[in-house]
Length: 313
Image: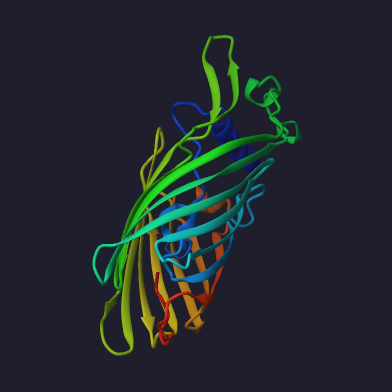
């Protein structure tokens, strides 16, 4: 019964859209390897046809917990100034399923021989599906759940800026600029409950420091700001050993701590796994943490450089 009440609260907050809590985009522990989902200006920055697949299972053993799958692909055009990308995402929590198909466009400007600034736009659709009538409620007259929301297809627009050089990157971006409405319910006391997409703002940054011939240090961060929700900050510190093995630790404010491990099978092929565990007072009682797996492959390079070492971002 406690599990049912908890998931009902989560879903109700997402759909009801009270001023106390706002719907948020999914969070990823491998945000630094899944950058196109966060920032459209990243398209084409690896100078290759890059395909990335990610699977995240959050709050294992918690019935109805979030599960997310994403696949992205992007590449520069032959003139090297334009990058194009495609991002497909599916996010499921309880009876709610939210999918998106987004195309990305980036225009890249060389500020110097070693640094580039890209400006990006994204456009696509969100496909929202919900079957709230399938829930078992303690209060059958709850107006939030009486209004069963079915399929909604809405437009999605975002923008971003991404600066990078060989050992450093930083970017800003925003998603859900249109803030589409899914539902509107007026209660007896006149208070309106509105299910609405919330605009999110992202700041990303990272660097790679060579500590020796065989060890590099890679710190990264992601800051997420959404209206009526707490600011979330991801801090990750990783060590890359022998240009093959990655070992790291992460911290997410108000949410989780975890560990990452990755392996560069070849300079073009990266395989990564992470596990994070909620550190709240009650949340760990109801789940066994979150798992994430990521695969990335650079199929075809568009520059003339020989690939002897992997690209770290």
